[in-house]
Length: 262
Image (cartoon, rainbow, N blue to C red; front, side, top):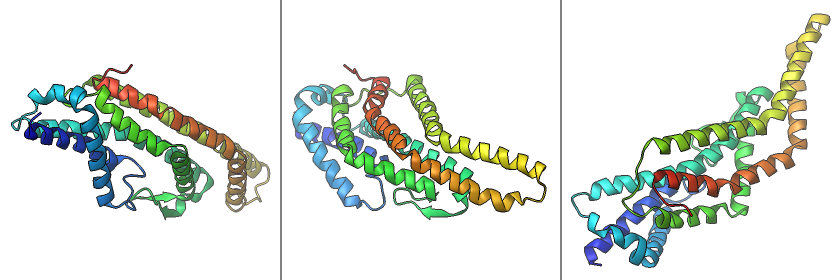
């Protein structure tokens, strides 16, 4: 392998890894220095080039020339973004469940600065995000991402990714499943708030002297937080399942992009 080919391969591997870290939660947080992301990407790119250059990467050298280099850079950046989008969608699912609870319980009025996101988030949304981030870190989520990006070069070599309709279908199916999971996480509290509102509506008809707005807000808040506290173990169990299924979801995306998943 010539020096020029080695440099081009290293650049493409680096672009895929860096683009993944740019969009993946935890790594993409503002608290993580940019130099750390670049340094980690260079380190992992060197590992990939050294270990796979003779097999998966070197096979594509004849297609990597300076004329089409920009096309391959964009292609590898999109591959990294697509893989990172899976992890981002999982985090967004947990935050979506928290936002539903904020709206029903009444915390949507007060927004906090989320440590993992640029936009402000509600109290329960921020709570769900932090809990899942702790589970993600303690449950080897970071190492799973690193292994996934390293394995992606074996299953999806440089220059072979094809963005067709099946990729969009996989992403759409992923979003549908994760949206349903987010609703399932929030459903006990949502059902409690709904039943409480129905009970208050009936009470206001039977006893018109009751001020529903004064009684209803603290009642829904108390019941919602109580149910949430009771169901925290179940919520953690669902979050662990999300983390466990992340590998399969990334594998499905790689397969849709054109890789061969054993």
